[in-house]
Length: 117
Image (cartoon, rainbow, N blue to C red; front, side):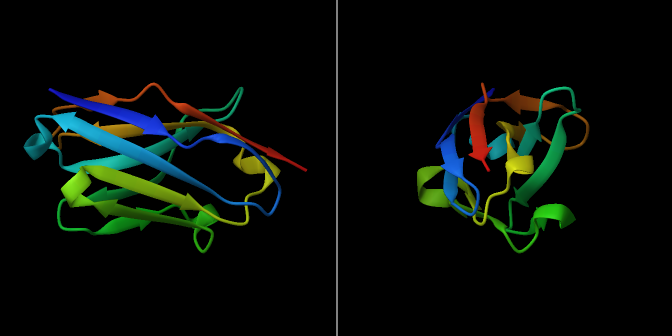
């Protein structure tokens, strides 16, 4: 089993930056990808970015150029650097450790990001 814990959310003005962190623990060798999702009120949870075991990354088109995902393997930590934040980025951001091959994964508790206009 893998546990993931997010941190780094907060309140920021439009145009500002935040860096979210996701620390994984437990059976981390079972992780296929670490994903960042977000869910805004009344909307479905959506995948924002992810990174796989060899460092390959995906970033959602609507945040490409503003959001960057990276990792520090020594710290079992994945970061989501969010620059030039917009009010529409306001959401709860969740870290998800995916086991691949349909085996499911583990979710963090979420961290709130609020961008004021």
